[in-house]
Amino acid sequence: MISKAFEQHLIGQVIKLDKLVILVNKEFDKILKYKTLICLQEFVRGCRNTFNMKNTRNVLVDADACPNQIKKAILEISKSHEYKVFFIASYSHATDRYENIEWVLVDAEPEAVDLYIVNHTFEGNIVITQDHALASLLVSKGVYAISPRGKQYREEEMPSMLQSRHFAKKLRKAGQRTRGPSRFTDHDVKRFCEEFERILSQSDV
Image (cartoon, rainbow, N blue to C red; front, side):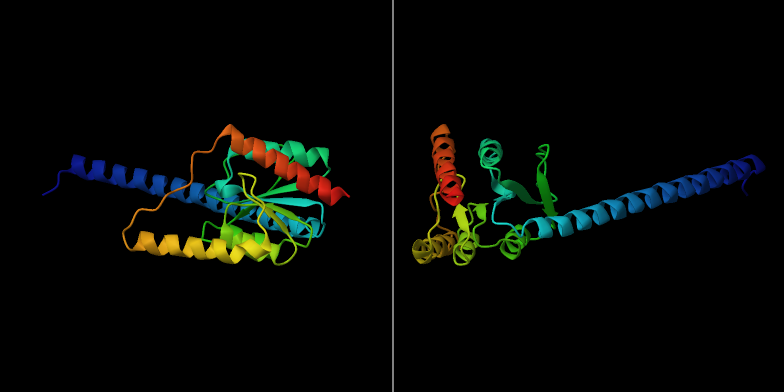
């Protein structure tokens, strides 16, 4: 038999739990509304960005794997040439927020950033990426593509670069170790700045 006092204690605990559930539901509703608002804001921003990108004086950055030194250099050099900069990143990688810069956030799914860039670039645009497959798609449509280390991708070089990439991937799958990229240095930053400045100056002519 349960004593009267213990029964009253249990009833009191149940009432507290009911109040807690109501509170949690309210907070959950707030979170859902907040997330919905954020999604709507990103949708509107994405629509505006799509309209703004129909311009040759745009720089799109594959921002997920772009070093901070290069991001800053892109902003400084682009500003001097009056180019608009768009940083494209997945929600899970968009940590660096710069003022007066357009961020386009996409799903964290593989290739989501690449697909967005391919679908929103036009001839004469400039894209910074270290993805060879993405670069090969871009140069074929008249887009300037440059790596964060200052390497401008050229259409005639892409088949051999993609073949080397595929071969290295096969070796890794077979359990063999392949040589990774070297450490990013100040020399890489200098080389990028010089090449990026050259491309923008060439586009200004």
